[in-house]
Each structure stands twice: as structure tokens, then as C-alpha cells.
Length: 222
Length: 341
Image (cartoon, rainbow over all chains, first blue to last red; front, side):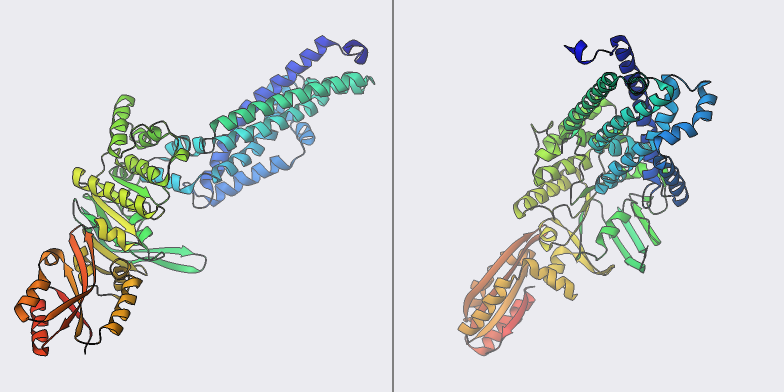
């Protein structure tokens, strides 16, 4: 049945491409989470009336985030080719896609982190200060735990966007389902391959969304 | 214990400078419950935040427990804050932590080892009457229970001073009373110095030993609670005293009485402390042979003793009535003639 509907799908290639897409998504999401969190913390703490209130640092970080967030991803990949080459010695393969994926999504997640932190009750931060908490303790014991549901739903949105980015990265040679859909499907006019790749991508997205929603619901005790 | 010397706090806002606290001086003794009352915007929130260094004074000095809070910073200030706890109007609990974890929070900040932490948390849960609710989340608690968690959390590091920022303003009257009793109990059992700010005279009456009245950043009156109740000076203080003793009802009652008892002298007697225990009425009747008709009475308990008002009609020989009034003055009972016949 499946063979007749999708005569040109080579399953070993399909699974390899799926593995590549999942690999790129997982690694870039993990790094984006850490990097975005750090940038988000910096953005939050340097904003007006906060612990490290600093207009210059806040403005510079904010501008940098906005610039990288605004560049269309497909252009960002091309702009980053020299950087990737310098870093990894090649611009082909799944690892070569990682710098662009991370640089493209970390600023986006940093914004979501900032929004999440702004939603934390100011009174709770004041209470922690009144108990003698230092800045590190406020970040680690108040800001992050108290915004956990928003941080998790934020990284879920980012991960879903990253699946889309990996497909774009695939077109310029990073591998994965996007690469398969483009090279094997589109360029050789095998619509069934393109369709099957799309189905696989959708399944990955649904799984990510389901995991994210489950954890968000579990952590929210409000 | 707490010494505030000529403190001024000016905030710079878009619309210019705002003086929140204006040349305030006060001192709080060890083990005392000191109340600061004022309407919103009077500067009391800022004043209480100067006591733990959440705000820095523009000028003047704040000393708590021998440490000049207004000049220390960084690690030293954070260390000092562990001994100056605070509870809040909106409780400010971490929703992501259970009751036990919330109470353990300041202990974690202070670096207390886990085993010791657990023991202390258990003790505190019992102390504030939350036994069995250790694993509940704040969202599952009532307002009163939340404030009990707040109090337990504030007591975790064995503080010397407890600051209460409108701690009962978000609670209903009954819960307010139970939280006030808990605070009073803690004050007596642990010898904890308590500074509280409020806009309700009821709170001051119920547990405070001394009170300061704040208006537009200044302290307009301060003293022993009973003394302030008996003899309020500033208009704002009179208003606050009226909140608890002379309700609108008693005003209406007086008007009604004036209409219905046209003869004799209507006198309002204010009893404070032990004078309220004396059998004044029967004494007047026996000693001066006048008629004493009780028209209205009210008594309320304060931390320093009872405070009562009584409106009576004194009828009989004019000279004797005058003499009776004079006698009342010497008995340390404040009298106020409402009408002359």
C-alpha cells in the first residue's frame, strides 16, 4: 500500500534524514536554551529599575538581539558561511548548520526569556532581596523557577521554529528532511518523497509540541 | 533597637522630585510592637523599606540592632537583612514552591545545611498552625494561611526585627484578628521587635504598644497607643481614633440622644487603662446624689489595656452636677460635655 503510494521513497535515506533533522534540532535547541537564557538574564537585569540597571549594556544587547532576530534565516546562513568555515573547516553536513541555527534562534529565545522574567511578581523578587538573597540566588531560586512554564513553552516554540530552520539549512547542503525533500523530491520531480518528508517533519513538530505542553502543564502550580 | 535619625527620602520622577519621607526621626525599643499608621501615599511603605535597606535614605541615618543600615552595602547588608525579616500585604510567596519549600527559602539563602533546614521548617509549620499543609502549594491556601506561611518564612533565620508591610490589609476582619494574635504571640514568646505599617486603627489598637501617625512624609504625632487614643492631637489622628471608637453609629446615637434627653447635662466620659475598671457611676450617684442615666457605652481592648467611652446624662442639682464633673477630672477620666441644658 505505502509502496504504491510512495514508489520513490527510499527508507534508509528517509530515516537517515530524519535522524539528521532530529540531531540538528536537539543540539541547536539545547545550545539555544542555554545561550538564550544567558542573554535573556542579561537583558532583564540591565533593564531600568532592575538589579544591574544599565542603559548602555541594555541598549547594546537589545540592539544585537534585534539585528539577528530580524535577518531572514536563509540570508543569515549565507552571511555566516565564512564564520562557519572558520569554525568547522567546512560548510557541508549537519554540524555545519549548527552555528547558523543557534545564532538565528538564540536571540529569538532571549526575547521570550525577557518576557517570561518580566511576568515574575516584583513582590517576590523584593521578598527575596529582603531576605538577603544575592543576584545569583535571585536568578537561580526566584526568576528561573517562577517563570518555568513560560521558559518551557518558549523553548518549545523555538524548537518548532528550529525544525523549520533545519529544513532551510538542508537546502544549502546541511542534510536532513529539508535536504531530502529538495534534492530527492523537488529537483528530481518525485512528489511522493517531498510529501513523505513533509509528513515526517510534521510528526517531529507534533511530538515536540506535545512534550513541551506536557512539561509546561506539569510545572505550573499556580 | 531601631534608631531613625532625621531621615529624608526623595524620589526623582519624571514630574520632578517627590519627597516620600520628610525629616523623620523615631526610635523603637527592643521587644516592642511599634505601629506606623497613615493613609496611602503618606510615605509609610518607603519608611519601612528604609529599615532593611531596600531603599536608601537621601539624608539621615537608620540604625538597626547596632548596624547602620543606611551606609552598609553588599555582603554586609545582605547578612544584616537575614536578621530583619519582612512580611507583605500580598504575601509574596513563590508559587513554584510548596509551603515547606517556601519556608526553607530564606534558610537556603543563608546557607543552612539541609538536615537543619528540614528540622527548622517542621518547627515553624507547627508554630504558625499549618500542620499537615507542608506539601500544599500557595495556590491551594487561603489568604490567612498564605500570610501564616509568610510569617513562618520571616521567622526562619531567627530575626531580631520583623517588619510588617500592611500584612493584614488583604485579609478579611476575622482572619486579620487571627494573624494579629499570631504576631502578638510571637512578640511575647520570642521577644521579637515588630514594626508594622497599616492604614487601619484597628490593627494599632489590637497589638501595638506605641504608634506613629504619618501624613505627607512626616510623623505628625507619636506616643503610647493608649495615650494617643485618649488624647489625639492632630486632626488626622482624631480621624483614625474615630475609626475604632466613635463609629458613625455613635455619632447618630448622640444626635438621637440630644433630641430625646433635653434635660440635664450630656457628658462623654473617656476611660483609659485601669480607670475603666472603677465603679464610677455608682460612686457618682452615692456621693453627689444626682441621677446618672447611661445612654451609650463602648469599650475596646488595646495591647496596653482597655479603652472605653460612655455617654451619660447627669441630672439633678446644678451645683452637684458641676462638682461631680470636677471630681471626674481628678479621677483621670477625660470628660467632654456634649450639651448644656
